Length: 260
Image: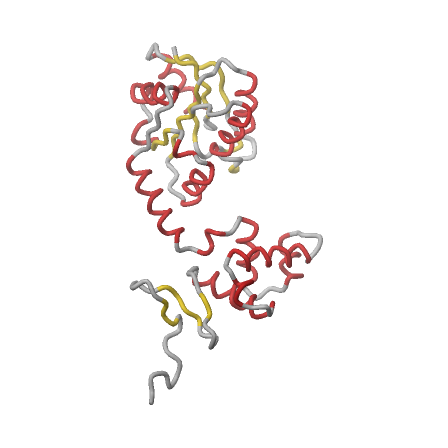
């Protein structure tokens, strides 16, 4: 008998899943949760649970807003219960979910399936057994999307930034000063923005190409807007990768280029 922790924010869906899974005679739901925090507490309080079935997007039923994700909940659970198996399901197709899975190492340890494809008790029971046995499964559609996001991120400077750095870069590209960015983000000290700028410059290797903060700021704005790797030649021209593996001018040849 599979002893299950069931995590689903919609009560009616959770009840239907519980009834269907227990009707198979192979699953016993020993704990339930509606939010990420509840899931973490339930895993800690119910040590007999040997696997979790968890929605990726969890919403706080009282507030009606997105709360911590199922991925984050699983990572937190695994701090206390290493390699605790989880079968995730979702209808979400946002790139951020796939990035979160990759960053957490989820894809090497968990099944991840779409609600519409696999959310039938008769199909879930084998996935739960596989997860307990340490075998992973990824819906082919999900795997394709993960590969797509991975390839895009490989050439995306924005993907190198943490969420707070990305927000600062966005506002920087809009022309806001450090003081204005701090006010917009509710920061007490504009120096926090300056420190974040430094992290952005390091991630985009601007610290290596310029010692002038104003120039670095302008170049960071261009990188954010185009979301492409950009380097600057000795003559100040902005260059981007081309399909031949070399570098080509971002803005085309300057006037007079190539003339005798």
